[in-house]
Length: 405
Image (cartoon, rainbow, N blue to C red; front, side, top):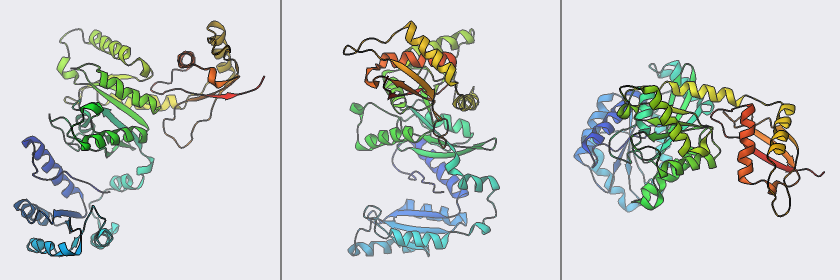
């Protein structure tokens, strides 16, 4: 397990620096080996010397990686760091893949064997070994809506850096979490902005990684800032989730900022209705009102996950399904397309993807011509299916196949 920490004492807000440093200190405590990366071209700095002292105090094995030595002529730059006193050091160029094999070999030599790690608990070992069996949840939303705060609230510690500075999270970060014996991976993504608003290539790649996080996830948690309401950008992000056909939970965060002194139930009902109206195309997603700051309703997230898990196991019998869909066709026939009308011969729910967690329900419809199904009529058929089984949190997938009469 590799922990990539933030750069220590770099330029930025003082609160951000303090949180980065706190994360580094936590990483030092929890790690078995420390990889200390320095900038050869920048030379030895007071920050390097301070960090070296901090790493030595930890008593953990340290490998010094002297980066940005791109060719043999620059090898002499490494001597500046001899005064740090680390016996294990490797000159590398991460950009040009120079010295990386030697660095990996040095890491392998310095790592303690599993039998010598006294303080690692059985849960820690289990987390490392069964990461492929975890339920992956992508936490997505606009910048500064509270994505990292929500994860920290769930973990009850500051694993993700949180500041008022929008865009603190630049990359999609996988965070391991175990609850009641079940393993989760939270993918903490960068806030997704409109492409026209990007100020740098870093932000462009951050958004690309966030979109990749959606594709990787078993479930998406869309975070919306209640103090701003559902914005146009929230709708765009919801569209990405729908396009990826992912199970979803909508979390209205910062409830603490607008929570009324009276009439709380009525206020919640109104907020949920407004959200559903704005995000009508994610009508299947349950809505949770919560506060990452006060932790109010945060634990209910896992009840919703369990509800979605149960829905993913539900099946509609073939007879019931065909009666429902034939009645739907009879009461509201599809419109004519190029002089032809869609005809349904038979329908069945597929067995689904066995190794996919929270797999959306898929229904195979045998018809005269799949091209005759309009988006509008597909939405109508999905609504009719949900009258039989709601499939909370799950999109419904319709797969059409041609069958001759």
